[in-house]
Length: 219
Image (spheres, rainbow, N blue to C red):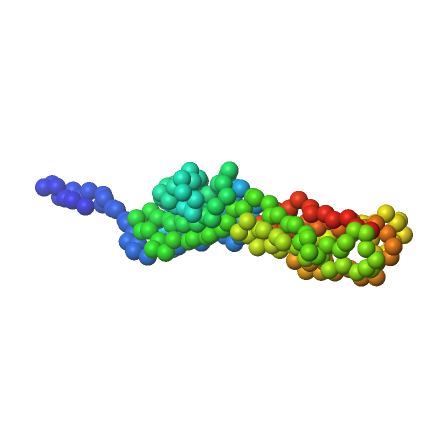
């Protein structure tokens, strides 16, 4: 406040400010992370931030991938969709890494960005029944030990589904219901009665993609 020569005092002028040197933090919410791997070509990330009592004013996201020329993953830092999220769509097949950091109103940036890496895989796997494992057609052997060759295009095979059907409606060995094979790469059958059988097998990769079925018929 000030006083003039006549002895009058002014009302005081005041100003308050806060010194904040503690960096904010950010984490990517687990529930918003896409599966890894996945066949879904979009993602909606949400973030949890803590500005230690100071307002978050900026969120910067960097999306990179292992695919050269991927326009969806430039590796250049830019604004997120909002201060608490990032929405992505039309992602081509690639392995992606999202990095996000935030800044508070005092100008502090978090020093340890939150990151998440995942793979988008939309190409279905393939499966074939190995020729050497196919029983002769026709045959008098009442068992079969099929083996399969699978290709997950770089993504692991997670499920092998077998369906065995027959002409005979009452054949208990041929239910026509899809079920697990004997393993991810084979199917064992025994006690087969006289009939004509068809084995159909398909596989699913870890990203959720199903192959076209491979089939073989014998009598």
